[in-house]
Image (cartoon, rainbow, N blue to C red; front, side):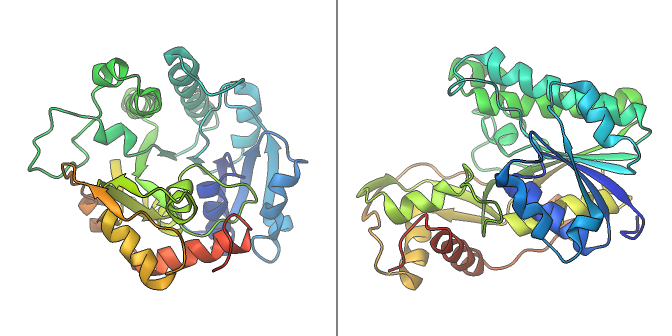
Length: 321
């Protein structure tokens, strides 16, 4: 699939991962339809400044994942779709299964049905390693790969609604593809960090920000699976453009214990108030070998951490020290 003259739709275009994807697509010559809740909202203004000429190649559409007609309008005329948006139910933090899980599934199926009607060839759906990791029955000595799914009943029992929503929505997406013939590829990023293009801090960036500013002395020395936001964008484009890409792909670059993560940050930025005591916990492993086999590469963890901290400083989220 060639970038020039390709028209694609990106749902949730103003978000953290989606902003980097839109930037990458525009730089490759794609024309992009981006869905946002409100094109006039100042928090989406960065999209028109991503690359020179963005205003000529990027069109924003007001859309809601629960509103099929709005999605259909944005997707019509495109060759491919990247479903990046995650539905956010109205009100405060969701605590009921129906609020998060049903909304995620409805939103995903609305996008896929609109793709079928618009004769889209391939859809890349952003899932999460949340749909992989919550599986107490997976062998402890075996790295989790694409065959591993979070256990739905265990998610319900432990009230991990986000993990459940990602698991159910991804399964529904892949099943829809099998049933209809629509090419559906899913990508499951781990904790996404790296520089921000958007003005508001996204959830996953707080993993690093809290280490730098919370001043908590004692934390669990758990394994963190981390991926750079720029590599996620590359993975999404790769799985769209590669004809041989199929099924699901875990997207995670680094496996690092919290103690080692703190020490890497401390070696470059020694003056933040880091944790000093670590509680040992069991280690898990996860594999991105399948994604690497189709050509995915990633930068060093050190580069990702430095670029992340610089971005947080420039945004005023953390102080310079």
